[in-house]
Every structure is written in C-alpha cells, then in structure tokens.
Image 1 (spheres, rainbow, N blue to C red):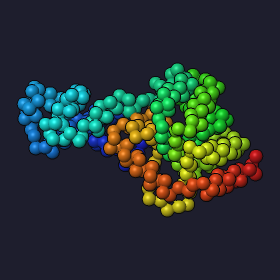
Image 2 (image 1 turned 180 degrees about the vertical axis):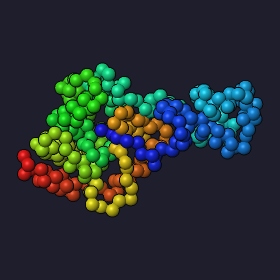
Image 3 (image 1 turned 90 degrees about the horizontal axis):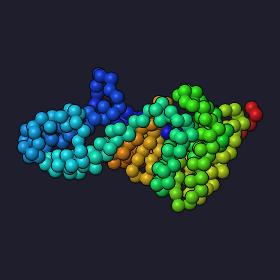
Image 4 (image 1 turned 90 degrees about the vertical axis):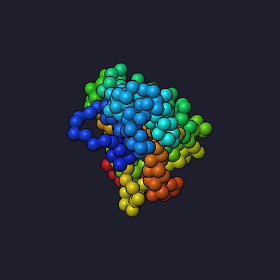
Length: 298
C-alpha cells in the first residue's frame, strides 16, 4: 500500500502550533497568495482596490480566514500578472479537505468498503506508476498475503472485522491488470520481496505471483537492488494515476496530491528510481533468489 509523506517533496510553512492537515494546507495557500502579491509589488490595499473588494478581504484570504473561490484566485493572479500559478492554486483549493483522509473515519464501514472506493479511480486511470519500498502492491497480492496484511490493519485501526469480504474485494480489483489498454509501471525495492507477511509459504506464493504478473504485456516491473549506488531515496511508497493524482498512505491516513507542480516532482522521483532498477531477467533473478532463500524454511 502506498506509505509516509516525504518532507522533501512538499514544502510547508513551519509552525509551532499543532495544526490539522487541512488547516496547514489552508495556511500554505494563504501564504502563497501573499507571496504572489508581494512578488508583483502590490500592496494589500491596492489589490483590494483593483478587485473591488473590501480591503479586509485580502487579509482574510492571506491569513486563511476564508477559502478563496476559483473566481477569486483567477482575479488575484490576473492582477498580479501570475496567471501561470492558477492551476496549482486551484488544485490546492480542491485538495484542502480531500488531501488527508483519516483511515479511522474511512474504515468505519469496514475494509471491504474501503477497497471498493478505489474502483472508480482505477477505471478512470490508463497509466499507473507504482513505487513501493516494503510491500507488494495490492493489485499483485495473493489472497493469503492480502489477508495477512489486512488482518493487521483491521486490528490496528480497530475496524469491523470483515477480513474475508475485504480480501475478496481486493482480489476483485485485480481484474483491472488484465485489461490491456491500461499500463502498469511498477518499481519495487528489493526489500519488498523480503518483507514477510504471513508465513514463509505465504511469502513464497506471493513471490511466485510476482513472476506471473511480470509476464503480462501491459506490466513493466523494475526492482531496485539493495546493494546499488542510487541517485535518490523515496521515504514512502506512492502511486501516480495518469498525470492528475498521486496517492500515498501513512499508518493513519491517506494523502492525495493534486497540485500539478508537485505531481511533476513525484514523476521525476519515479523516473530517477527507474534508472537504478533492473528489469526482465535481471528482475526475475532477484525474485527467484528471494524464493530460494525462503525455501529451506518451508
């Protein structure tokens, strides 16, 4: 599953106050509006005069006392000659409430329902770019491996115990990997092959499943060897859906990134990780080596 947000990929205003993620995002948006105005050499009063707003509205927007509308953002950027900033700012507004969704709230109806919520997104997406550092992606998991993982999360999050239904829902989602019009580019750290969920037989079955899925014509699997010089390190797993969304998961929440400039950073990170990955027979050799290391303990 996607995991913890990398501080190097998102910039946030430093604050000594404990803020909710939505409040922090709102303050970041206000700060960006202020920077755009100051960068244009325009005072708050002058901006208010140019827009026809009451002068206090500028302060309220910059201090996150009010969430800007799309029209307000477009007008702000037009006056400040910063219309190239509109897409990122609009994405920030849309993400204020959706970028951080607590698992505890989302799983009240059980894990089965959580599995089903991603189906529309999968249907809309044609190109999946998936990076995982310590787990096998859900789309490639065996029932036993998925059950071992989900059993932990059900207990950890204290959600309704619908393990069998949740595993069935996860397996049903996997049908999408057989649709040849969709592309799956997957990068796994070698550590993901060697992180156990369940017993050794479960892990061996999962690794054999990886070899099967890797042979699909619309799947491109790369594995990053543990002992290799690398240009970068991603501190968490992330999934890129086409060019419009990045999803990650922490132990307690899901995080959405919709800002185009930040999506571009994750795309660059994925490309850098891909350069140090091995593919085809070299990747299969790493999987087989992990299987061989497990075999004596069966």
